[in-house]
Length: 378
Image (tube, rainbow, N blue to C red; front, side, top):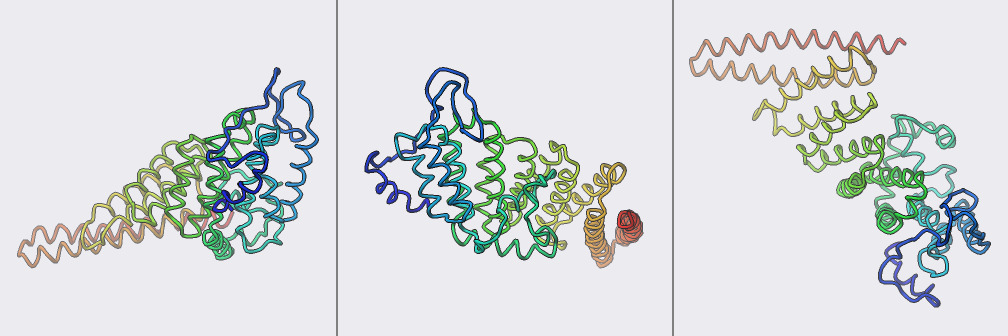
């Protein structure tokens, strides 16, 4: 694990000596165009093939596939600390796999034939790669399976492996940029894996860790779809630590910039939830509830007319019912207060407002219920 890296480094440093700073990777030296292939890693045209490097890489891969994580970790670290191979064609592949090894080694079930990143991708990515998800148990992707996912995430946060994987991911961004530039697909892979670590930290209730990982990734300008899903994880984590304005701002950015309608709809719903959560209670301040109701009207205009998701329509209906009920009680309270102050005109005004609000609530519920029922029947 990363916490013991100094001791391990000294053991393998018989030829290299202990390093106080991580090595900054440089693409293999020589003349020629830089290439990448799964068979050879990063190389320059005309460069010779290193059987020793390839043999070590294959040994580490086999150890990983067989879930011999300690052995895989030790083999992969050699690509970071042994001078002869720190800039080799497999060094970038090795450090990327090392971060996955750290992550996977924290799971309680070593016999599962699926990967943690595949599970996170299935929950987060709007467009799924069917090939990578075929081994995932279908129960883990359903609402009923959310408890199992949470148990798994709690085990990961308790083991400390998410922090270890995150440390290596940051190291890759800091010291392996030359290699990532040569292989853009690896940068996308790394960004997605860092986002997944943030999500598992959130599900595992380590909200500050989720925030730190998400902010670190967002500062590196990931691709749009990864950026949007990372922001959603960040915003929900903000709510959990009661940083409501930060959550609102983050959700607003997703709603404004995301292209996927599902993500935009989820962001609008999240913003409404953050506004409601920011209130100290309906007895104190009605403004957050009125703002949330305005956002609900945006939902009706922006989504129900051109796009419909039955589950989200139901969720919005439940929120709208709650908001109208809160504001109804607030209007009734105002009416009673003015009546006690013998200001009957003001009391009557709020009594009429409360009555109209109740009528509006009934109509709104009927509207969303029709949409929901229609969606269920399709």
